[in-house]
Length: 355
Image 1 (tube, one colour):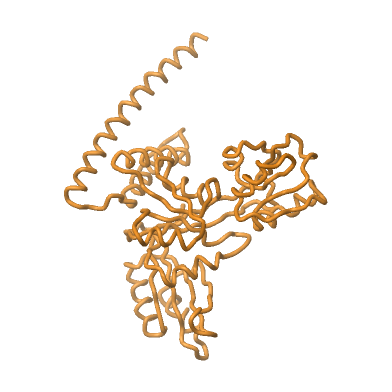
Image 2 (cartoon, rainbow, N blue to C red; image 1 turned 120 degrees about the vertical axis):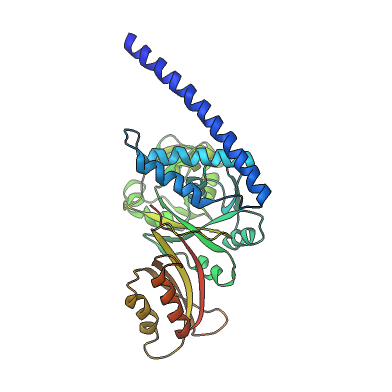
């Protein structure tokens, strides 16, 4: 035990040094905040945060893993910024939904999170300046695109400032301590579909009931003796439920992509993505004409999705994601060419790709 005690004392001294340096860092950050207020600079500079984390992960030689380093610094940056004022983030609620978890993953636990009942309310809060950013789901790797999110971009003036990819794991939870005591299951329709095979094998004949969200399902199950919910691990903790089975989704690699919306425009990072909306003329080969400028400028499309225009029957708008930044020469040539070919073009934002 003598060597262990010696090593623990070394750790104690290091922890004191870390604490001292964290407070020095916070004091300097507060001085920067005062200077930003004096010169009326932007309160939050996400590109600076990205540069800090990318620099640290690049010079890290281990054994401390880079993924953990990113998480630690996400909390340091979040707490430091909150000394000036915390960021406010609106999201599709309630608390402990996957959208909420994605928001915390991006902005840390020191931000203020404001749950909204509907997606359009998230957009409205950001547009009105009542929240700094909003988090909205855009697509799931198994269930496809969230069409309502695409529709909301048509009439909104917000920018896409970033994206978040979150691996989706589903947990079976209940007040019961034994899975055999469960008589009903609540969840959102998507998780129920994603766990169908597991449920048929392990809980055959148990009825399912739709809930507006996974978090709401957990709350409903918490109010009944023999009910269960399929929700996130965080929802079980929030409502005091027992986790009876972990990661019950039928397929691994289930991810949801979320968009960060705000009023800021992101600088080039060298690994960017751009999103646009375009409406094309109704003619033979219209889609081919739309895609041709991307091919000629060697720009890789990562997503294209069509949506009907709500104000004109049988006319469509295309949501397109492609690699590159709006300031790249090839992208600028492509956009200029498209403007001559389409009825309508709206740039939603250029932002760093999720890594």
